[in-house]
Length: 114
Image 1: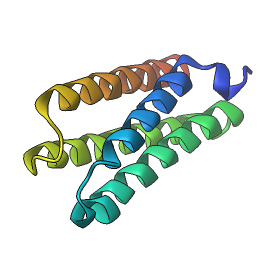
Image 2: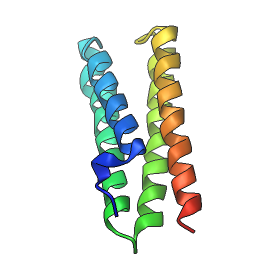
Image 3: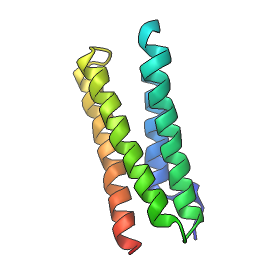
Image 4: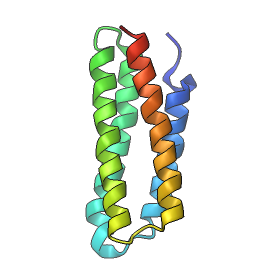
């Protein structure tokens, strides 16, 4: 078992987390402490689930599934941010592409774990 920090999905997730923190910083006060905090918590939970999936063979599939659920929740939050005009379309597309990359890696990991 390799270190979680060596996994490509972990690196990509962490990079996405940093991008989200930078972009949430510019939210208006009204959204920074509601939508912004929810996005950060969900993203951190996703990274923790990736770590747990790598650490426990017995619960690997369960933790990967939780991480995939986190991805879909983050996707919803990003869409809401776009619809509320909190993010420009270019940044929205960039973040969604990174999120999609993480999603594909989690799906592949789950498939190979069967």
